Length: 219
Image 1: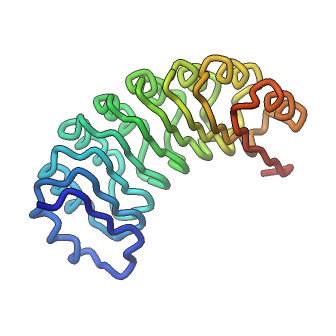
Image 2: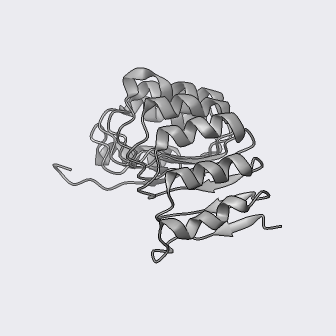
């Protein structure tokens, strides 16, 4: 029985073409990156394959991100890697549901721009997933120091992407670097509260961390 399936970037597949996947029952890894899979189809797949460890639904325009996360919270408690990059329908509701997927090690929420930091849902998710090793919050412009302080408690974290953040401050970034000795990659590009001198000093203080940085005025 099929356990691993990758159809990423299969642009020629149409909605009905994915229906055959509903008969699968043993999947452990599924990659549908930038495909036209329909929402009803992916819900059926998730309900029929309850041992998924890796799931990529990045750039899938036909799915309802919040509903997908609710389904995951009910039937995918062993999920370790989840990619929802550019899921425009994902909001605080979906993030709140994901706290049930506490085994997550790799989580990509990059360019999911409808997650409001004021709800506290992202902080609760981070607190629930203490095994996180890689976390991508690219372009989360409302994420701030509160979220970063929660991230600083992730002792297994090796990679963090906060590119394009407007609110995080230098002291909190420094606290993160001091608190997570295993961190090896930090992308802080286009973080408006940081400057060239700050980055130079942090690179000097933490030579084992690859700190990515670029900044253009007005971005």
